[in-house]
Amino acid sequence: MLELQGLSVTRRNRPVLDRVSLSVAAGELVGLIGPNGAGKSTLMEAALGLIPFSGASNLAAMAATDRARAAAYLPQSREIAWPVSVEDLIALGRIPWPGGGRGPADRAAIDAAIARMHLQDFRTRTALRLSGGEQTRALIARALAQETPLLIADEPIAGLDPAQQLACLRLFRALATEGRGLLVSIHDLGMAARFCTRLVLLDKGQVLADGAPDQVLTDDLLRRAFGITARRIDTPDGPAILPI
Image: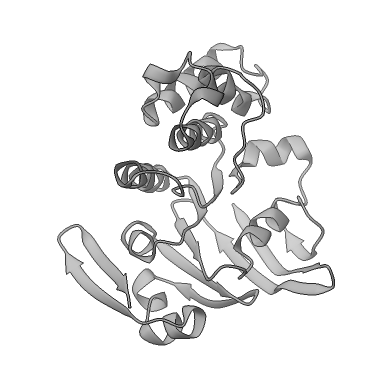
Protein backbone atom coordinates (compact mmCIF):
# COMPACT_ATOMS: atom_id res chain seq x y z
CA MET A 1 0.00 0.00 0.00
CA LEU A 2 2.84 2.37 0.86
CA GLU A 3 6.44 1.79 -0.20
CA LEU A 4 9.14 4.38 0.51
CA GLN A 5 12.75 3.84 -0.50
CA GLY A 6 15.58 6.18 0.41
CA LEU A 7 13.29 9.19 0.93
CA SER A 8 15.24 12.39 1.56
CA VAL A 9 13.99 15.97 1.92
CA THR A 10 15.96 19.21 2.24
CA ARG A 11 14.27 22.45 3.27
CA ARG A 12 16.02 25.81 3.33
CA ASN A 13 19.36 24.06 2.87
CA ARG A 14 18.71 21.87 5.93
CA PRO A 15 18.26 18.09 5.67
CA VAL A 16 14.90 17.10 7.20
CA LEU A 17 14.68 13.46 6.07
CA ASP A 18 17.71 11.31 5.33
CA ARG A 19 17.18 8.14 3.26
CA VAL A 20 14.06 6.92 5.01
CA SER A 21 12.64 3.59 3.88
CA LEU A 22 9.43 2.06 5.23
CA SER A 23 6.33 0.24 4.11
CA VAL A 24 2.73 -0.09 5.26
CA ALA A 25 0.81 -3.24 4.37
CA ALA A 26 -2.86 -4.14 4.52
CA GLY A 27 -3.98 -4.84 8.06
CA GLU A 28 -1.31 -2.67 9.68
CA LEU A 29 -1.81 0.33 11.96
CA VAL A 30 1.67 1.85 11.89
CA GLY A 31 2.37 4.52 14.47
CA LEU A 32 4.90 7.16 13.46
CA ILE A 33 6.51 8.51 16.63
CA GLY A 34 9.42 10.80 17.43
CA PRO A 35 10.26 14.17 18.96
CA ASN A 36 9.10 17.47 17.51
CA GLY A 37 11.10 18.25 14.39
CA ALA A 38 12.00 14.61 13.73
CA GLY A 39 10.42 14.77 10.25
CA LYS A 40 7.09 12.97 10.75
CA SER A 41 4.89 15.50 8.93
CA THR A 42 7.52 15.97 6.23
CA LEU A 43 7.62 12.22 5.64
CA MET A 44 3.86 12.10 5.10
CA GLU A 45 3.88 15.09 2.75
CA ALA A 46 6.77 13.67 0.71
CA ALA A 47 5.19 10.21 0.56
CA LEU A 48 2.11 11.80 -1.04
CA GLY A 49 4.18 13.87 -3.47
CA LEU A 50 3.13 17.17 -1.89
CA ILE A 51 6.70 18.46 -1.51
CA PRO A 52 9.94 17.86 -3.46
CA PHE A 53 12.04 14.88 -2.38
CA SER A 54 14.64 12.44 -3.60
CA GLY A 55 14.19 8.70 -3.41
CA ALA A 56 11.05 6.75 -4.29
CA SER A 57 7.43 6.71 -3.16
CA ASN A 58 4.85 4.50 -4.84
CA LEU A 59 2.10 7.03 -4.03
CA ALA A 60 3.97 10.04 -5.40
CA ALA A 61 4.55 8.13 -8.63
CA MET A 62 0.79 7.81 -9.24
CA ALA A 63 -1.41 10.16 -11.22
CA ALA A 64 -3.36 12.51 -8.94
CA THR A 65 -6.72 10.74 -9.38
CA ASP A 66 -5.21 7.31 -8.80
CA ARG A 67 -3.42 8.59 -5.70
CA ALA A 68 -6.66 10.07 -4.32
CA ARG A 69 -8.30 6.66 -4.72
CA ALA A 70 -5.34 4.89 -3.09
CA ALA A 71 -4.74 7.07 -0.02
CA ALA A 72 -6.71 9.51 2.12
CA TYR A 73 -4.75 12.16 4.00
CA LEU A 74 -5.57 14.01 7.20
CA PRO A 75 -2.97 16.80 7.61
CA GLN A 76 -1.89 18.25 10.93
CA SER A 77 -3.26 21.68 9.98
CA ARG A 78 -7.02 21.22 9.82
CA GLU A 79 -8.57 24.59 9.02
CA ILE A 80 -12.05 24.53 7.49
CA ALA A 81 -12.28 27.48 5.11
CA TRP A 82 -15.94 27.55 4.03
CA PRO A 83 -19.25 27.63 5.95
CA VAL A 84 -20.50 24.34 4.52
CA SER A 85 -22.58 21.79 6.39
CA VAL A 86 -20.86 18.85 8.06
CA GLU A 87 -22.48 16.52 5.55
CA ASP A 88 -21.22 18.54 2.59
CA LEU A 89 -17.75 18.70 4.13
CA ILE A 90 -17.66 14.92 4.44
CA ALA A 91 -18.98 14.56 0.88
CA LEU A 92 -15.77 16.21 -0.39
CA GLY A 93 -14.07 12.90 0.29
CA ARG A 94 -16.04 11.42 -2.61
CA ILE A 95 -14.65 13.77 -5.27
CA PRO A 96 -12.12 11.21 -6.62
CA TRP A 97 -14.88 8.71 -7.38
CA PRO A 98 -17.26 8.67 -10.39
CA GLY A 99 -20.36 9.90 -8.51
CA GLY A 100 -18.49 12.88 -7.09
CA GLY A 101 -20.64 12.80 -3.97
CA ARG A 102 -24.02 12.46 -5.66
CA GLY A 103 -24.41 8.78 -6.51
CA PRO A 104 -25.85 5.92 -4.42
CA ALA A 105 -22.37 4.61 -3.55
CA ASP A 106 -21.36 8.10 -2.44
CA ARG A 107 -24.41 8.46 -0.19
CA ALA A 108 -23.69 5.09 1.41
CA ALA A 109 -20.04 6.03 2.04
CA ILE A 110 -21.00 9.43 3.50
CA ASP A 111 -23.64 7.92 5.78
CA ALA A 112 -21.23 5.22 6.95
CA ALA A 113 -18.53 7.80 7.76
CA ILE A 114 -21.02 9.95 9.68
CA ALA A 115 -22.13 6.91 11.68
CA ARG A 116 -18.59 5.73 12.43
CA MET A 117 -17.62 9.17 13.80
CA HIS A 118 -20.94 9.58 15.65
CA LEU A 119 -21.81 12.79 13.82
CA GLN A 120 -25.49 12.12 13.13
CA ASP A 121 -26.59 15.07 15.29
CA PHE A 122 -24.19 17.41 13.46
CA ARG A 123 -24.75 16.54 9.80
CA THR A 124 -26.76 19.69 8.94
CA ARG A 125 -24.78 22.03 11.20
CA THR A 126 -22.34 24.50 9.66
CA ALA A 127 -18.88 23.01 10.09
CA LEU A 128 -17.39 26.35 11.16
CA ARG A 129 -19.70 26.34 14.19
CA LEU A 130 -18.30 23.08 15.54
CA SER A 131 -15.77 22.97 18.35
CA GLY A 132 -12.17 22.17 17.45
CA GLY A 133 -12.57 18.53 18.45
CA GLU A 134 -15.83 18.21 16.54
CA GLN A 135 -14.20 19.67 13.43
CA THR A 136 -11.43 17.09 13.73
CA ARG A 137 -14.01 14.30 13.88
CA ALA A 138 -15.73 15.70 10.78
CA LEU A 139 -12.45 15.80 8.87
CA ILE A 140 -11.65 12.23 9.90
CA ALA A 141 -15.10 11.30 8.57
CA ARG A 142 -14.25 13.02 5.28
CA ALA A 143 -11.15 10.83 5.02
CA LEU A 144 -13.19 7.73 5.83
CA ALA A 145 -15.77 8.62 3.16
CA GLN A 146 -12.95 8.57 0.60
CA GLU A 147 -12.89 4.77 1.08
CA THR A 148 -9.24 4.31 0.24
CA PRO A 149 -7.22 1.22 1.16
CA LEU A 150 -4.63 3.46 2.88
CA LEU A 151 -5.21 6.24 5.42
CA ILE A 152 -2.41 8.65 6.36
CA ALA A 153 -3.21 10.80 9.40
CA ASP A 154 -0.97 13.41 11.01
CA GLU A 155 -1.74 13.64 14.75
CA PRO A 156 -5.42 12.69 14.33
CA ILE A 157 -6.16 12.60 18.07
CA ALA A 158 -4.70 16.04 18.83
CA GLY A 159 -7.45 18.25 20.23
CA LEU A 160 -9.81 15.38 21.00
CA ASP A 161 -11.00 14.72 24.54
CA PRO A 162 -9.89 11.42 26.16
CA ALA A 163 -13.08 9.56 25.25
CA GLN A 164 -12.84 10.65 21.61
CA GLN A 165 -9.13 9.80 21.47
CA LEU A 166 -9.94 6.26 22.53
CA ALA A 167 -12.87 6.05 20.11
CA CYS A 168 -10.72 7.28 17.22
CA LEU A 169 -7.90 4.83 17.82
CA ARG A 170 -10.34 1.95 18.36
CA LEU A 171 -11.85 2.84 14.99
CA PHE A 172 -8.43 2.94 13.35
CA ARG A 173 -7.58 -0.46 14.80
CA ALA A 174 -10.91 -1.79 13.48
CA LEU A 175 -10.09 -0.41 10.02
CA ALA A 176 -6.77 -2.27 10.12
CA THR A 177 -8.59 -5.45 11.15
CA GLU A 178 -10.88 -4.95 8.14
CA GLY A 179 -7.83 -4.93 5.87
CA ARG A 180 -6.94 -1.28 5.45
CA GLY A 181 -3.46 0.09 6.03
CA LEU A 182 -2.91 3.12 8.27
CA LEU A 183 0.09 5.37 8.93
CA VAL A 184 -0.63 7.61 11.91
CA SER A 185 1.66 10.06 13.70
CA ILE A 186 1.06 10.14 17.43
CA HIS A 187 2.72 11.71 20.46
CA ASP A 188 0.98 9.70 23.19
CA LEU A 189 3.32 6.75 23.66
CA GLY A 190 0.80 4.84 25.78
CA MET A 191 -1.85 5.10 23.07
CA ALA A 192 0.73 4.12 20.46
CA ALA A 193 1.73 1.03 22.44
CA ARG A 194 -1.87 0.02 23.04
CA PHE A 195 -3.36 0.40 19.56
CA CYS A 196 -0.60 0.28 16.93
CA THR A 197 0.48 -3.01 15.42
CA ARG A 198 3.89 -1.53 14.62
CA LEU A 199 5.86 1.59 15.50
CA VAL A 200 8.38 3.57 13.45
CA LEU A 201 10.57 5.85 15.57
CA LEU A 202 12.01 8.85 13.73
CA ASP A 203 14.84 10.97 15.12
CA LYS A 204 16.74 13.69 13.30
CA GLY A 205 15.20 12.65 10.00
CA GLN A 206 16.19 8.99 10.18
CA VAL A 207 14.48 5.77 11.24
CA LEU A 208 15.87 4.94 14.65
CA ALA A 209 13.70 1.85 15.12
CA ASP A 210 10.93 -0.03 13.31
CA GLY A 211 9.10 -2.93 14.90
CA ALA A 212 6.56 -4.11 17.43
CA PRO A 213 5.74 -1.55 20.16
CA ASP A 214 7.60 -3.44 22.89
CA GLN A 215 10.71 -3.56 20.68
CA VAL A 216 10.62 0.18 19.94
CA LEU A 217 9.56 1.64 23.28
CA THR A 218 12.68 0.54 25.14
CA ASP A 219 14.51 2.64 27.71
CA ASP A 220 17.53 2.97 25.44
CA LEU A 221 15.58 4.12 22.39
CA LEU A 222 13.37 6.51 24.39
CA ARG A 223 16.46 8.03 25.96
CA ARG A 224 18.17 8.45 22.59
CA ALA A 225 15.14 9.97 20.84
CA PHE A 226 13.35 11.90 23.58
CA GLY A 227 15.86 12.14 26.42
CA ILE A 228 13.44 10.34 28.77
CA THR A 229 12.81 7.03 30.44
CA ALA A 230 9.38 5.53 30.94
CA ARG A 231 7.54 3.50 33.53
CA ARG A 232 5.47 0.68 32.04
CA ILE A 233 2.38 -0.71 33.73
CA ASP A 234 0.60 -3.73 32.27
CA THR A 235 -3.17 -3.49 32.54
CA PRO A 236 -6.01 -5.74 31.32
CA ASP A 237 -6.64 -3.17 28.57
CA GLY A 238 -3.03 -3.01 27.40
CA PRO A 239 0.20 -1.32 28.48
CA ALA A 240 0.26 2.10 30.14
CA ILE A 241 3.42 4.13 29.61
CA LEU A 242 4.32 7.04 31.88
CA PRO A 243 7.28 9.17 30.69
CA ILE A 244 9.55 10.20 33.58
